[in-house]
Amino acid sequence: MNEGRLAIVGDGDSITVFKAAGVATFPAESAEKAQTVLRRIAKDYQVIFLTEEYARAIADFLKRFDEQPYPVILSIPSKNGSSGYGIEQMKSAMERALGVDILFND
Image (tube, rainbow, N blue to C red; front, side, top):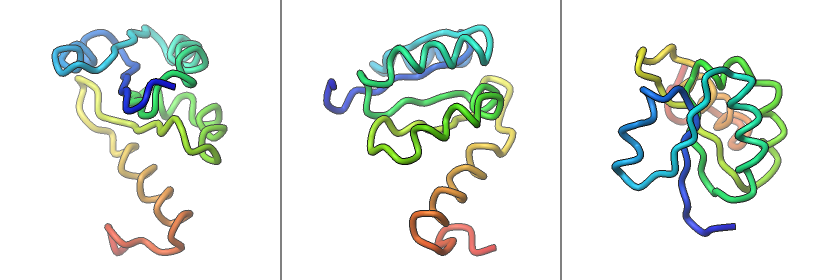
């Protein structure tokens, strides 16, 4: 594994800006393609950002990464804005790990 390496998977327009910041970019034109890319790169990156639309569509596939320390897969808004899915996932992961919601207090 390349220590500290970051990657992003999503539609081309949503991920372009990350390339300028030194993040490895992997364009995918559909959720199915994103899943294929994730399978291929999962061992090479510690943190992988994934646009929310694709993360929601392949949520069952992403569950396989929940029990592993790496890669950490984080949902981020796409060029279309946030659907709230990334926040929902973060809240759920924190509740699983800590047994309580410490950020949102709902």
